[in-house]
Length: 368
Image (cartoon, rainbow, N blue to C red; front, side, top):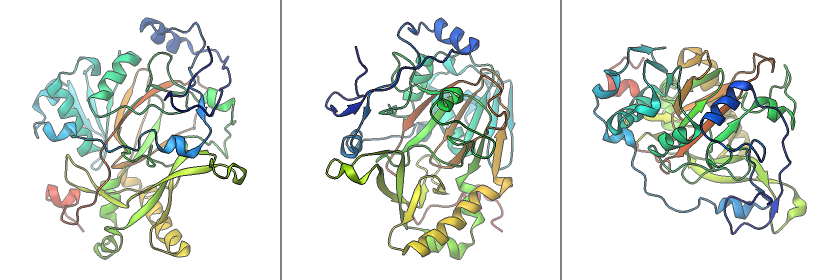
């Protein structure tokens, strides 16, 4: 049977190609241990929708959302006491918890992990023994799982996306000068009505930058300039306009605030990314380009607000897309067999609150 679209009502589709790339041995072992059926090929690709309106309506409903971190003990005793070691990798962003298996977390510990991610932006766990099914179940604790309309996924586990650079290279070859793909600063699913919250990746070396700290790098007067402003955010994949398909592919667009507030911490965060923030609403293009270019630079060029994590096999990273941007490093130049799986939970509709503090203000740190 040919692959179908992720929603039955979508009938105008493009059938995907059949992949024949051989799986890395550790990946095959993990999938077979989890009982994943590989007999029909790997990965599974859904039939891709042709038209923009079909994709726009996939998740265009209003959704109730309660952040797991808002339920947590502020001291996070159940989670942190279970770790053999707690390593804060920088002052601003990134924490590693040693000696914890994600699949074994209690409900209380999962809430506390949600708060820790909200405070530290990204949290790392090495030596994880976790199946794709368990990875998805953990993601569901933090929100509705995003099932992408066209990207590869683990067979039989919708919402567990396959991150496989060698597979991507069969469609668009990467190079030293043009690594492409996720090797650029971005945040996931910004075009959604309820964009991405927590993402859980078992994968390779990645860099993250703090949206809390990027906002705090701005002068108070500049913050006033962008507070309350909205921007147009676009999808990573384009689709045809049903009313005018000859015009060529177009991106899904939605309007969200440039500065948003995290519901668990109550802190303000800069929320832009060079890859998918298109323009500021109400400004001329030249004005918008100038301001956005500066904001991208603040995020990307201040290395003191970034963290890079050195990946080892079976490492998990969980980060919050509401308060970070990230960049998957291609410094291995495709010479290592890398394969990962990713689960992303959708969060609240972004909002701005002028009365919300910055992270440094809330923690009583110097704001100079």
